[in-house]
Image 1 (cartoon, rainbow, N blue to C red):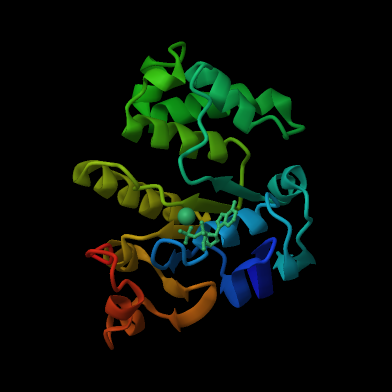
Image 2: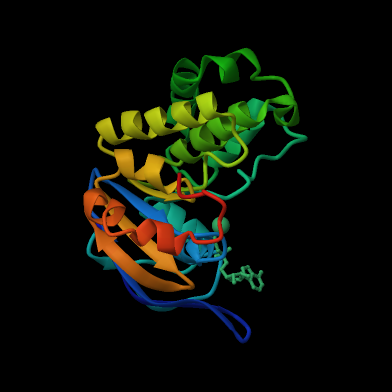
Length: 237
Ligand SMILES: Nc1ncnc2c1ncn2[C@@H]1O[C@H](COP(=O)(O)OP(=O)(O)O)[C@@H](O)[C@H]1O
Ligand SMILES: [Mg+2]
């Protein structure tokens, strides 16, 4: 569905991603894991059109456009690291922004209502400022907003960051629920072991390069994770 080949992302002289290749098949959860600074966010920001990149990106058999709006229209939505919620807008205004690139305006009301059913707390707070939501609620809002673009591939960049363990569990359960609806998900995480438990396929990044890829079981073996996360103080847990 998404095919990444020879991806290169650089910030001036800093080469953050080098020769990276991987694929996301339809309906699957692919985990993109690696220590802090490995190049995970650079990878997904480049896919989403938020950073210049080199290499070949194909989505559903066609070259992926470079501009962020065009990527969104092509069917890929990114929930960025840090969530990107507009704190001074209401919950509903944030959701409406998620649908901004759509041409089928008539259905948006019903889909916002459907998101309120999925996330009742967002419905209760719909006219409240998004900035007043808890961290977990803001993560739900960020995901609901991305879903309003009707993506076929959802990219989540460290959705569990800063959340209490119970909420982390909830985020992982939500990922499984969304996969069950047929959505493909590229899940960026530092919580490697938890992520590998739900992923269909995993890609391990180390200093901008592919370190390993395969079924989750292959990555949990061999002490690969321990090495990749060395010095991360147990972030691989
Ligand atoms: N805006 C930036 N300017 C310069 N270097 C950056 C910038 N953002 C990230 N980097 C560097 O690129 C590398 C990869 O970062 P990033 O993609 O954010 O990693 P991850 O998401 O895996 O933690 C790091 O060495 C980081 O310091
Ligand atoms: Mg990151």
